[in-house]
Length: 64
Image 1 (cartoon, rainbow, N blue to C red):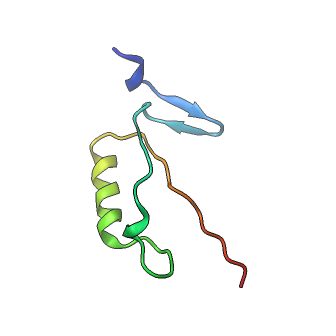
Image 2: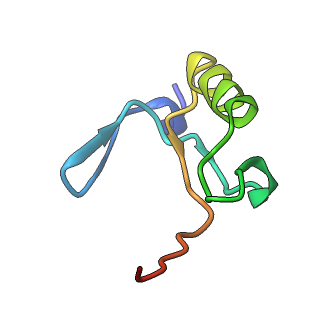
């Protein structure tokens, strides 16, 4: 079996495999930066299909 399908430890987190999805565009979020349901549904399908990890794009921080 290929090593890509074996578990992998990332610091304190164990991934079930080495399949990683890169970040996607941010137009999936609303005006407040909260992810909308279509991208959450998409991520859920990826994980259900066996994806081990989804890397987020970026974080926007604003001090109120």
